[in-house]
Length: 153
Ligand SMILES: [Zn+2]
Image (tube, rainbow, N blue to C red):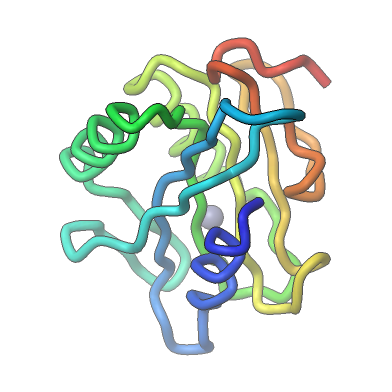
């Protein structure tokens, strides 16, 4: 994760009365070594959200994808906040990540930002259609050259 991504994620930790918020994640495949998460986009006013749910606006997702892909980055997934210290993937999360996956034709990395300090308060999952995902630390989460070839784990 780039320092900028860490700043965006930890800067939006959910307070007790806040709605969830989130954005998309883009990786930079250039340079040496594994691709790094280079960009986390900000919450958008057209997103719909409550205390325990969030729907990213599909139009803004498309606009962001076009913007960053034209600059050589790859769309790899989504992030959002939870109103709990140590984030867990809910069934609602799984449904919405799988819908996102089908809509955008790749298997996303999903980062959830809890209220506890990093590293334990931030977790990542790679979402596939038929597996129950395992939590990983964001820095070890696979960021493939395209979402569809994330390694199985
Ligand atoms: Zn969630």
